[in-house]
Length: 476
Length: 158
Image (cartoon, rainbow over all chains, first blue to last red; front, side, top):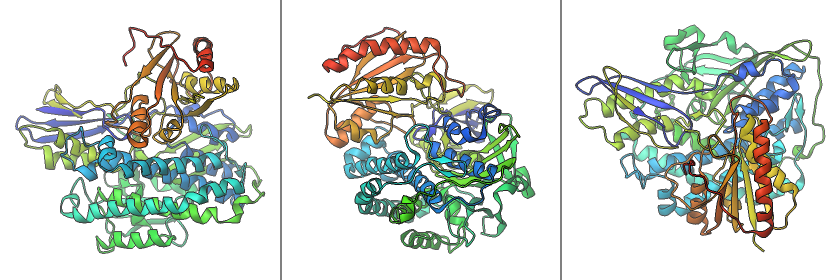
């Protein structure tokens, strides 16, 4: 028996390793994606005053600190007894959140996934990278940089600063958007939307033109989960939980955030530091689900911005209105959300509530709060209990990549079975297919510390005795 | 006038990982003409836009196992074979500036030795502070003259 190890998995965020075990006939008998996730944070936060938490949680992750900032702030709104923040506060938070989604999705497409889509899975790895994109499609690479910068500047303007932003506070926000800040963004808005449209066209055309290949690539039927607005619209900032099965039947709908733990449980497995969440009524074996752009486009009834809604209809038409379970369709869905985020940013910038001065609401203190938000990579849960001394006594976080843990493992197994099993020689192109399947999910495997000298994520090929016979180790 | 950009990067909420931003913050207080500073959790592709507007860029970061108290190394543009928003390397970023913005900048990495990274605290260890101070003392006159002198160490892997 042999085992393939891919470490690090490249063009994903953070650290990880894939092992694929083969028998003597090179048939795949097992595969696993190992994720090293730092789990100490939930203990660290205990004893801290609750008002510090929206800032402190940003220490958890340098990749999507805004998502943690906002999820914690939403939980702390509940703690301070506020069920509805002011229009200015909510719209500032939404602008921050759509800015985060915009820059994250733009970076993933232009710099992480586009090399696979533009050059093909088997292209020379010396070309199949962002420099290859820069050389062959220079305008795309620059667009990616400029879109990322646009989103980051929005975050800076709404959160106050790049590192450890303080914008969202329990019960509201601590600043509004000045006219000068607004106008600096509005002058670039049309250009940003144009680039969103052209990126979406690339993602859609790639999926439709290669449907024969991508339809089965790392794909499987699954349930999907996200928050959803009361009227069924996609809402990345606020809403109740909705889960649907692979055919679109609702498993639960509009579940209050505070009751998530009645519907979602988490399982621990010996070979991974990461937890495996599942839908309680379906149990750990069958209750796993997908989150993120694919899940969100599948769960929503509609998108409330016109161009993204038109794109959603085209997307759903591919699977005759039923949920799309194609793993590679994550890219197309992500680009629909990119355009949606752009449309939302434009609409918010034109809303004078952003210049309002009513920023914070106070209420009667409560002991427990849950905040759930749709981070770029999927549903993010923050749950806290606070004692009479204002200290956090319990914290539970379910991060997006954790929910996609089982689906990513299944995608790896599907690709390994289809492309690696039985092959006498495992080429770089075949190994890359495993990474392509993982990258579709845009997983964030970060532990937030990155100092020089630290290594990122690993695919290993092991024999029956666990001896590594081949491996791929590329720095991410 | 030579335009210099200092980018200090790292997560100040993870102890000595905050050495880069701490260096940038200190340098900012000197108010040296022609010197701009920026701080972030990590280097990101959009930094290329700001770098392209300068002549010299200095990347300041914590180093896990580099020489004490710090090193300064000139770097050359490198192909961006792979990157994420999490881990683009200074060499790759300078390569991106050259390839995408047609600008060749002089670039240096300042690696300040850190020791503690694995707790969620916003403070630098005592030894890291000493190393930071040594780096500041060494770099400040170079910022003023816009001329940089490398300090090499044999046990550093580039």
